[in-house]
Image (cartoon, rainbow, N blue to C red; front, side, top):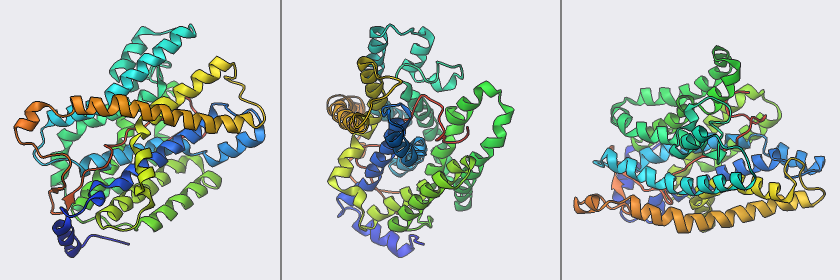
Length: 414
């Protein structure tokens, strides 16, 4: 088990301005792609791309728990935002940057999804469309509302709530005693587990929304990441290094999908995910080897937000245009189509990242007033509140996604 001693803190502080890639925590960017791929694999197994039962069963078995990729994203989001929080930065600046990160891509996909619905003559609920446009749909439990238009954007609705709350709560987090932060990390899996009996208090028709979509409930994972990041910044985090954390994650994934009851999945995976996230950050801070920070993995992580926003829309639209929606493609056409959808979505995501996300971040995220006032430049490593150098995360921070369907691979409850 590895912790950050006072010696390692001093060493990190001394060398913080000499680091390059390690200062940007690129391994966390690489982790974003793994989480996005888990979600894609889950949809490949549940959206009936493959007609033949054999290959379909293989994909479904491998990615049974892929829906938990959104859980990974929420924890990672909390960790990254606390780690990269800038001392003295205003709440308005924080909210402006978060808006610039998620909204332009969301707006593009919202418009494309609306055009597709008009093309296919799908009924459009104007209230649901407006809720989706404003990213408040996750608060509406009515069927057809929280999974509306580009249905994966329900998770952006949750993230927007997290973004609004964090600057208000962060001062309290900075003052919290370590035992309280550890209590949050330990309590979240237990609270997730308690959702199984707890959902009986909610009308049966709203239980999926309550356990899977409701922003207050989904914020549990976000605050777990927040607490873990603050512990690491203070040098109080104790966890395995990246190889052992990765092994724990793989073993947890296999055990959960094969032998463990479904109601335990999310609690176990939340613990495995936070271990991997903290271990990846620790590897970058201390210059240890990490395959997650290769150039390819970092690039894939940088486009992962656009990838997740695009992938369900692309799969659904093409299958509807070809007449294969609901039936799947026979023979080898099914598995080959999965690969084709992966590559096509990745290409479209790269375009969206290059021509929408990046320029809009440059245009919206850094107002002139911030530059005139001498705000800290975003590219430099800044000292953390507790002595550990606070590194900027490569490629921004994570934004999650998942499906519009209730499937076996649930995140919290059936």
